[in-house]
Image (tube, rainbow, N blue to C red; front, top):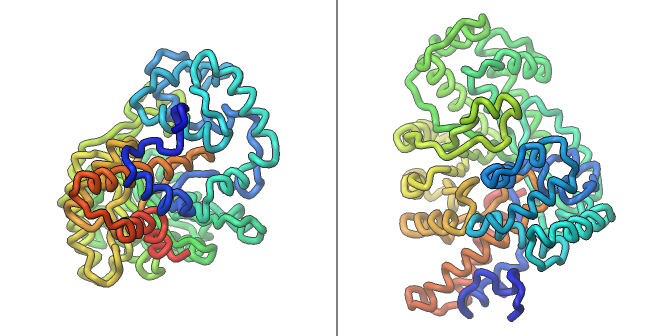
Length: 466
């Protein structure tokens, strides 16, 4: 075995895990069905200026670690040179041991740049020069990075106001990796936002509808869903603290929307009634188009008001929330199922305390019509690490069928994040290999190997049908 930290059997602790990974999982293509990659960069086949450009800029995981170590903000999001920012990241990396960043960092250096040296303060400058030189070559353009990762499909995430011009350009191109999108209309739902009316105005312009009433809003959203569908969209996505399910009447909701458009303050209950109504409308519309809906639940966002006011959202000030999830989620799914309008659904939780809630909730609405119709999504955000992924898979295994699981996604803005699929696959294979070794599972490589291949690739291929 190689003496390097990242080696062929990294995270694989016995011969069964090794066989499962190398023979059944390693070479499966990647279906990354939810991420935040820039379709513009893909369509233009952008070449990154250096390793900081592709690896540190925009990566709030790394930013949080650097801040914790006491690195000045000028070396994180400030005006320091790209090289100096990377040197500070190199200095930080040894301090990230036992954080998934340590594993991800070295997997990404190995898989994209063939660098197996540990990144630290001493090696940082040489690694900066080597990686940055490679990134300026055509082999490391955005499109070629996706090919290098063995990606078959990547699905970005766009607001309803997006014109999808870059997806249209990619569809006409000869790029071999399929690039699709997911419809994310949260800004049209969260009516308490201070910028809500400005957003509704922009939505109306794109939909070519003057949005004065609640019915106008529904018509505008319907037009945008139709437009996204015409451009190959098959998924929606929502990032919410929890599912909203407050009793409402249509008359109430119309009045609440009118109050907001007149810049009148809303009560918490009024906001919840509106959010419940619009979310149900959207989910019923997704069903009409045969889309898959995703719900990312449980983030407590923008906690640091001072820093959020300086840097804005998605800059590293979010954490796990402890919202109540079960009752509203059950009522919401039940309301759709009662009308027979519950489409394929993936539910992700951010609070690990909700693992068993989600693992049992999906079983309430898997009605035998579709294999794995309602899915417990893989470990997300703070949970997409070895411990978090293992706990999610254990909960799913104990209370459902892991054999129907559609596996991993990156949920990332980084073009170097795809080794997270490898990381997940190694964790999966080691979990099963360990149980074979202990005699808790039979040494049936043909069947368990098939299950590994399904979770790694085949289940997602069948589920999404792109």
